[in-house]
Image (cartoon, rainbow, N blue to C red; front, side, top):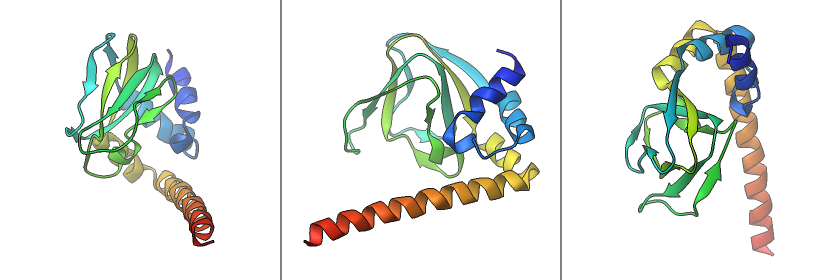
Length: 150
C-alpha cells in the first residue's frame, strides 16, 4: 500500500477518524508492519502492552487470559487492538492468535505520544472523541441502572 492508502485506512478507524492528514501521516510512516502466520501468537495475556495493533488483513482470535472474563472474540481488517495501550501502561487482557495469515501495523505508544505532542489539535480532537464516548457510556450505564431499580 502507498502512504496515501495507509492514511485513508487509518482514517476509517474510529479512534483516528478525528485526526487530520498530517497527524495520520506521522502514524503511517512510523508504524511497523508485522505478519503473523496461522496459529502463531501476536501477544500473550499478561504481557506488557506498549502500543496497539491495527489489523490490515486477516483475522485474530482474542482469547481472554486467566485473570480476565469474557468469551473468545474474532477481530479482522480495520480493527484497532489495544486502543488504551496507545495512551497508558497496561497488560494485555487476552492472547491474540492468528486464525489465518494476518498483517498488522504495530503502533508503539511512544510514536502515538510524539504525534500528539507535535499536533496539539490532534490531542484536542482525541480528547473530545474520548469524552463523547465516556458520556455515551455513562448514559448507557444510567439506563441499565434505571432498569435494575424497577
